[in-house]
Amino acid sequence: MTKSTNKKTYDLEERTFEFAKDVRLFIKTLDKTIANIEDSKQVVRSSGSIGANYIEANESLSKKDFVFRIKISRKEAKESVYWLRLINESNKLTNSDLAKELIQESTELKKIFSAIIEKSK
Image (cartoon, rainbow, N blue to C red; front, side):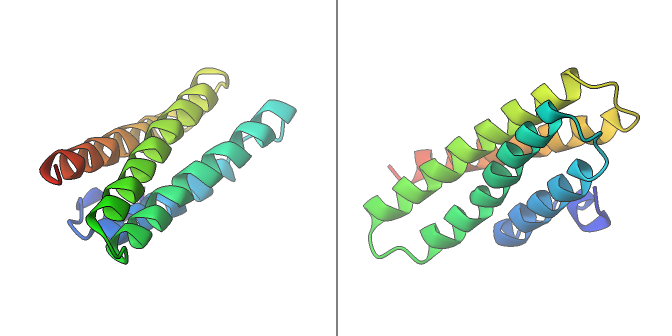
């Protein structure tokens, strides 16, 4: 993870951007197997979608649309956990600690979005 992510920034747009960037940097370290290529495509999409939907939520015109976009961000964070776990557990990674940090960050983002949804009710 980058230094800025380790500080646990409270700017959620920046935090989700850093997460997506860190996922991309992690993916570059994987062996180019068929499974890793396919799993990598999935986690690149889901990790980037977290922040993209959060930005959309902040631009929403209604509370209903805001909550809908936040729910998508939460869903994408859950999906990122899944793909990162699958990659971590199906490879002999030399950087397994980084994979675990990314899984933890995605889990924390999921919890943040869950809290936003609860407060928006």
